Amino acid sequence: MEPKKEVNSSSYQTVWRNPGFMFLWSGNAIATFTFYIFTISLPLIIYDLTQSPLAMSSMRAIEFIPNIILAVFIGVLVDRYHRKKLLMLSVLVQILVLFALIVLLYTSSIQLWLIYSLGFILYSSSYMFGNAFHSTIPNLVPEKQLTEANSSITLATSTIEIIGPAFAGMLLLSFNYTNGLIFTMAGFFILLIFTGFVNITPHQGMERKEESKFVDEIKEGWISLRENKELWALTIVILLTNIAAAFTLAVLIFYSVDILKLTEAQIGIILGSSAVGGIIAASIAKKSLRFFKRGIIMILALVIDLIGYTMLVFSFTWILLIIGMFLIGFGGATMGIHYSTLRQSTTPNHLLGRVAGTSSMLMKLAVPFSFLIAGILAEIIDINYIFLISLVITIVLIFYLSRSTVVKID
Image (cartoon, rainbow, N blue to C red; front, side, top):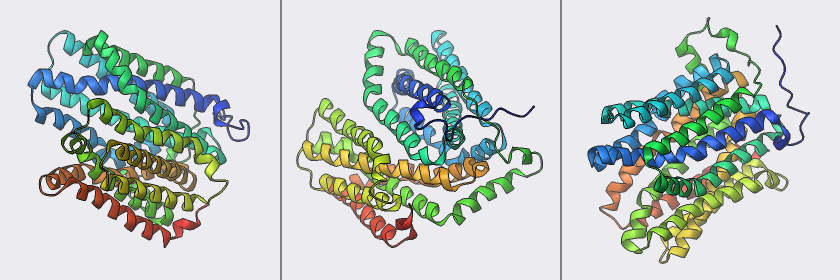
């Protein structure tokens, strides 16, 4: 039987009236919101079990592994198989992992290696959902609404980034983290149900899965990314902006506590200001296209980043840190929204999972090493010089983009 076509392109003048997008968007927002309970609980579980900061930081490192070593393989799966099935499978696996953790905690059977193993499975499934989610958006909304769709996703993520930790903290004051994980699992159940309501048509290329080799499909995604000159240039740019941001974030809290002698509340406001910048960037992303080309907007976003890092270099008060992190959050969110839109609109849909996986791997590859290097440098040089490194990287990127073909992107 011929699959039912998703009513998308011209039927809805805005993504907010598109039921398929709204089910997926709202389900993802709810799951992301409740996931903060897990994010806060997991380090506490490891601490109670080991009292070891190394064990806690090792779990943090495990979060990055799927994005680095599995991204391209997951990208192939997203292009090979029906994306709705992969979305639901990835959510179901996360529910099962959370259920297993709850049972192990209630029965006092939890062990560190089990936490690491279950955590790796959960974060791998989470990345699969993210890749499939990103690749599905062009099937649900027309190209002219992709910027609005990506802005909506960033708006939700940035808003949740502000209120999520506070909600999770208050909840864990009333419930222990074992019971708190039940709320996280409930959020993923809602996501599973909402995803089931979304009609996602099969994409082209699925029929090739029995004929082509896995390695050849990975290579095909790599070639597609490299041949898209503007997307490739921006992938490298975002890799370097991630390095600059990682250098800053690695030492920001230490600088706030040790140098400026700030309180926990002040540090929370500083970190939250970055998310506020993301919210405002998401709110004006679509409107900004009326005045500037997309390529020019990306350069302007880097200029805003540059001003933010300048604030950090010369910060002698926490107010400057707030302004600096707000600007960096604004610039980073703007880059992310327009990069995602460009990737979705210029990549053939049957290659989108692989291109997203390959570019994501490249963009995140150096982040863990940047955290480590920044920590080492902080022992040797003044922390303001580390902020200066981020500033210099941004200057180089502005110069590079301004001389590239990216400036011509509409």
